[in-house]
Image (cartoon, rainbow, N blue to C red; front, side):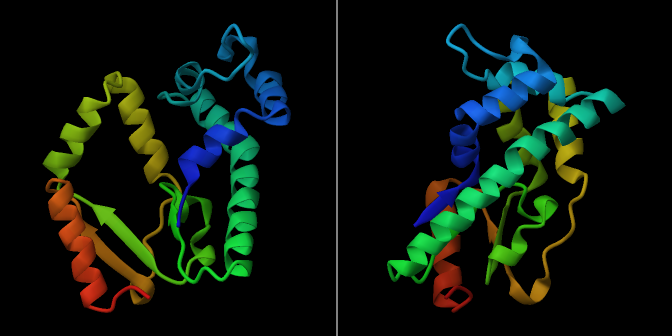
Length: 175
């Protein structure tokens, strides 16, 4: 079972309570005609080079992160009660949010710098937004503890990455 924090964040941003807090902090300009949060508009407010952008990102994280964590914990509890022994948390900001304590084992998926830049370019973000996102990712990052961490190289295609994951399984790096 994979629990995707980004998908859960989308769920959270669709709840009336979170929408009300987002509007209270960022205004109605971040909503579409149906009253849903426009993530691109919100990104324009929270990702930028100024201290105001940094404060806005912290405010957004204060709205979203606790709700995402509660949902992750509830789903983990339900999975454990159902007898599930292994769950994968796909959480891009796991270390920054301090959620690594939810995990028995950490797997860092990385790729070489050239490939990482190529993949970021494919997202089509303006240069300033991309730089701000990278800065935000680096802010608060702390390396995972080596004794409970494995690395997967995702520099190649999907088949290559799957083989790397298989290597972890055969090396008994994963439960």
